[in-house]
Amino acid sequence: MTDATEFAADDRYEVVIIGGGPAGLQAALLLARQLRRVLVLDSNRPRHSATLEAHGFLSRDNIPPNELRAAGRASVEEYETAEIQFANVTRVSRSGDGFEIAASGVRGTPNRHVWAERVILATGLREVHPQLPSLRAYYGTHIHSCVVCDAWNRKGARIAVFGVPEAKTLAYRAGQLARIGSHVVLFASEQQVSEADAQLLRERGVIVDRREIEDVVGERADLTGIRTVDGEITPVDAAFVLNGFVANLGFLDEELRPPLTEDGFVAADNFGRTAVPNLYATGELTAPGPEVLIISAGKGARTAIAAHRDAIGF
Image (cartoon, rainbow, N blue to C red; front, side, top):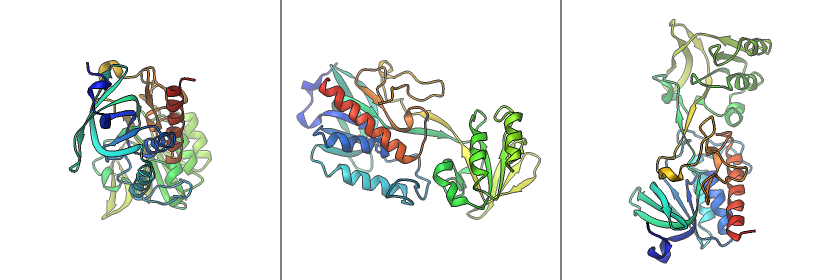
């Protein structure tokens, strides 16, 4: 086992943040402003890469997600104690009273082997889509995952709602969209949406369709309908899908993997502290999972403050 003394000064950090989305970058910004030496390691493969615009982020409404991230990186890099590098973290292991982090460079950046007193996990989640052959062709343009983020842009449209078999909040999503779309149809089994909830939705004008979806269909780049297993096509202009999510934790040594919640998110307190000392998790990695970007950024800020306070010791 190595410790901090075996690393060059340039490779020792007070905090390494894994993930450079809104949560990770916001955490880095606040820590840098406290003169903490911070390294952000980011794979530069965000979950929202297919999304054309990010919405609801104060002062940055309608900004493309890649531009939002670039602006965040620029803000962080203004501080002399902060560093950002594109790299895939391959292993995090215990090293003395801190952590040893190995990362492989991407797009020509160097590999890194660094030591940190504290690690903040801000890697986000991997999406698991319903198994529909053509879904990805429209994902991010006509099929969206965030109702709060994207519903306003679909006001007055014919909207479909569906999700993975284990989806739990489809009724809530359909209820949200009932005030947005001109025509909302929810495709859900009784295991996904009870008949009692379905009746409440019908009273609000939502059509509840119990048939299984075979695929989404369209003409060129435009989504035009949902095809059910009986071959019938329901015309729609847009759809909202509830995906499944998996936490990206494979790079952590077994002894460092924090417990997960029943829904598969990292178990942490309200400030991102996990059961592993000096290991934090923030953003959509923690319950309740994916939220609007400004909430993820806020969670990152709160985790940064906790890490800074823990380092002070009071």
